[in-house]
Length: 102
Image (cartoon, rainbow, N blue to C red; front, side, top):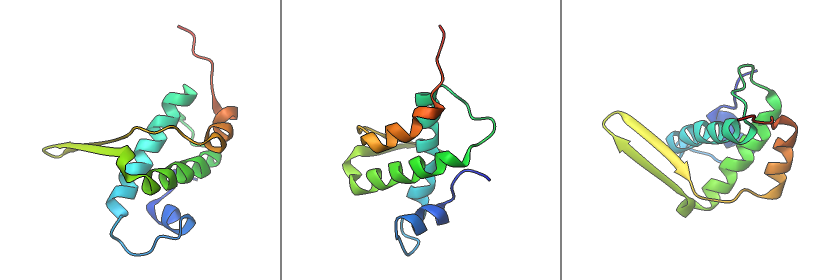
């Protein structure tokens, strides 16, 4: 299976309408990139177990809109968050964390 879709997130978080579709799509990318960095893994083969933490992260970010910022330069846009994740999200990522040797 592939990374969670906008429709999956909307269903899981009981969001209707299309008003937040672009924001959710950007947050999916942001959450997955954060998870890759946190776990020290590029996830060349996507694991379905990552979908729930991604959905939970998006739920947190949508409930705290002040923690999300974005920047757009021409056609390029970037979304980032300044928040601490709840323990249940970090705990669910624990099995995926890799040791990083420097």
